[in-house]
Amino acid sequence: GQNIDQPTEMTATEGAIVQINCTYQTSGFNGLFWYQQHAGEAPTFLSYNVLDGLEEKGRFSSFLSRSKGYSYLLLKELQMKDSASYLCAVLDSNYQLIWGAGTKLIIKP
Amino acid sequence: IAGITQAPTSQILAAGRRMTLRCTQDMRHNAMYWYRQDLGLGLRLIHYSNTAGTTGKGEVPDGYSVSRANTDDFPLTLASAVPSQTSVYFCASSDSSQSSYNEQFFGPGTRLTVL
Picture (cartoon, rainbow over the protein chains, first blue to last red):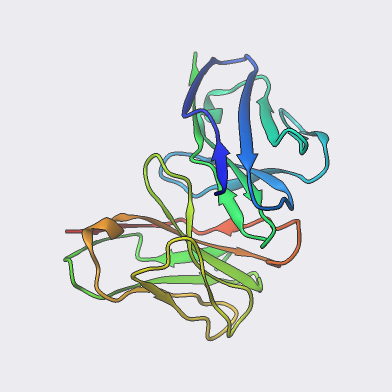
């Protein structure tokens, strides 16, 4: 079966750095996405990786290792508004997105 | 309209009733999707449409039907609602369903409670 694993919840301090991990086992791989979802709102796109390595976009970076079935999302200089759930999703061989359950990130002052 | 809209925002429904959730996008995207999101579970695909006139079943299609008469609209119908269909429903769209870069844009969601 297809499976995506992420921690259920993480806590970090404002101004710090946090790394959210995602491991996956899917039938095929056509890319990995990270989305942000604030409570009661829709998911919004953060990043996309299809090749191994690090993609940096401002305070957010995303890393992919296809051989290890592993990705992480790195958030720097955390702000209170970063409190949200972070969803990892993999595009499988049928071009369908398989979603993890999400990691709820709590930022404390 | 800008992006994707869904209606209603929320609904309480008696079991056994028929309900249609509406979804409209104005981005001229070819592909559209319906997901449900339940606490502790990831988004689960109910049905999808790669282009107007075609639909396909996702991971959890039972009890739901869809149609795609034109590019913009993708309604989801619950023929006879059951309590297990209580969930938050998200409609999404993407420019293409058959490319690796498949960023999906989401509507605001419909919170459905079946009693």
